Length: 422
Image 1 (tube, helix red, strand yellow):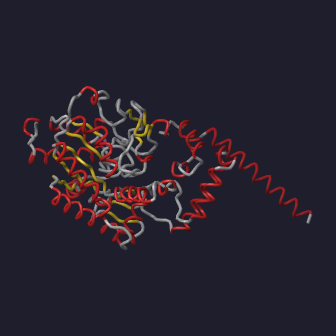
Image 2 (spheres, rainbow, N blue to C red; image 1 turned 90 degrees about the horizontal axis):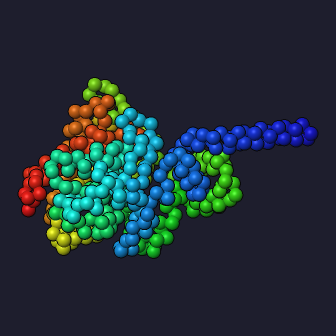
């Protein structure tokens, strides 16, 4: 018994020393905490660490009121002239950008205030935003340079179609645009539409639990309790170890999704895409569409309102469909988990058919970027990716391709100069 106690005491002391050293190390070098783990830290401590690492926090944002009963906390925008930092280890990543005086991604910080009206207003999510590229490299700014049409970018990360419309009504319509481009993203706009309808149905209760990454209510309750403890509010090491344990629990609870894939180019070179295994909910919602638990009519109300606003305000509605990276690189992509390939192809095809049909029905100009980006992908190389491998958002080359294709649509159907728009 004495030997057992001695061994136990030695073991506990070793654990205490390890945890203490881990605590000191993390406090000295908070950048050592992976972002995928940091997002599961207690909220107050997470914000403190993010501030130390110069990452964006809620302090950098303000809420825009919404009138459609959707989740209020999804209507944040960046504060005027906030500086946004990106922590991605990849060539061509721009680590820091500054938003304009309205909190949006435009190269001229005063453009909104100084311009009485815009020819074109863009609404969308992070695929319209300047995520890890300069505002002047984002496709709305490139489109303006190509066409001469004054263009304002209302894109904000983490939005869906219903949020796009709220920003259009709150900021865009007062600038009397003659064209409004709604950029639909294949990856997560379906998820965002689901959250909108769920929040309205459950009066916002659905959104409150979005921060819990697990399906199990028991695991989520344990997570909430742990976060509210003294150690949860103050200890770096505790949060790191707890987050690791929670991630293991999540893997067992919902069969961890592997959404990584490889792109192979004509010269045989290969690039690992989605290297951080992000956006796994895209696979979840593809499965929900495939097995009939959800359907694409979740978008119907938003698209009908877009048409109604176009008729009321007299602008030309343009629907722009942006594919996920694996769709743009179709025929060149190999998923690490081959079991999801068919699901993701069906998901992409279903969305593309739906939006093409709705555009015809509602009278939108429609541009599906998938074939254009696919052609550019086949002609590209591992050294000139259209999407960043880490965050799978547009690179400078991807933004340039989008701007070129949209400019061609506008020239062909609407005229390239302000006076030529019908």
